[in-house]
Amino acid sequence: MKRCVALVVAAGRGERFGGDVPKQYKTLGDAPLLRQALGRLSAHPDIAEVRAVIHPSDLPLYEVAAKGLGIGAPIMGGQERQDSVRLGLEALAADPPDLVLIHDGARPFLGAEVIDRVLDALEHSDAAVPALPLSDTLKRSLDGHGCETVDRANLWRAQTPQGFHFPRILEAHRAAAGLALTDDAGVAERAGMTVALVEGEERNFKITTPQDFEHARDLLRDVTETRVGFGVDVHKLGEGNSVTLCGVVIPNDQGLEGHSDADVALHALTDALLGTIAAGDIGRHFPPTDEQWRGAASVLFVNRAVALVRARGARIVHADITILGEAPRIGPHRRMMTTRVASLLGIDSGHVAIKATTTEQLGFIGRREGLAAQAAVTIQCPAETT
Ligand code: MG
Image (cartoon, rainbow, N blue to C red; front, side, top):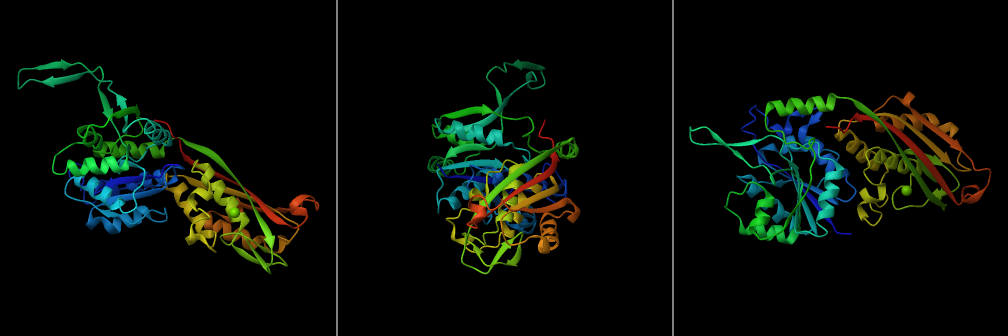
């Protein structure tokens, strides 16, 4: 699969917007506005990495916005947006991706479908831009002599993320340095690339004015929807004298084998959390081939998944975990496991169920070859409608 990196441009000072904090760091819901876009891009199963281009003096604000989302170090931007994008692309060139999506940090509500459409279009096109048709009639004013109507056929409003093949857009940006082009597709067009238009979304609007910000606030406050995510995991039993389940170390005459601490219950819980926001699976976010997760405490996986869920303004309501195994007995540890999971999810322990069952000595679980776990998580999040 092609490796895709998302570059979020957030270096602007927001002079048009006013206020003492640049608009991308103003609080929307309970987090900086920028966190929405960072979280949504990080959650997308086909995006390998997210990086942001920021203004050097915004570093402390940025750290709050990106906390816990697993995003690489920020890149320092330049004077104009185009300079910031070029500097971002130059920073990515050290480990060049195949594809790059360039997104405005001030468009908080991009949907996974728009990302899918842009990535699909890149299969056969040099570049792809989400866009919407114009609905208003267009007028051109004539120096104090009234106006004339502009034919709006074939006219579109361009949005982001705009997608490109990395080496070509880097080259095009280098060649366009110093010119004032309004978006990255413009840079691509200038370099002779074909830019495909794909369907954008009204909800993916750019926050430019205080009214836009109020509109974004309303969307987050609006109708909520309830979602349930489900997760399953299995780990092999082997040599050892304890197992870690729900973050609690329990003495046992066998241990669990795995790349991390093999906490089968927290792995199922992580997948259930990711499932609520259709964010792929645990293997996508924490590849077993990645050395940094060797022996890792699985609470790290849960923490990341919780951050991704919350970044879009969602609230975790409840979790239900079932552990399948002949041993160890869960009863004596249930209270501690419940407390642990509740604190990881930031919810009341009365909203966390930890259950256990044997399989009547049937199958691999019955033969004590492995342990399995299932988890369900319920969340409430703003309805994803326009
Ligand atoms: Mg696992």
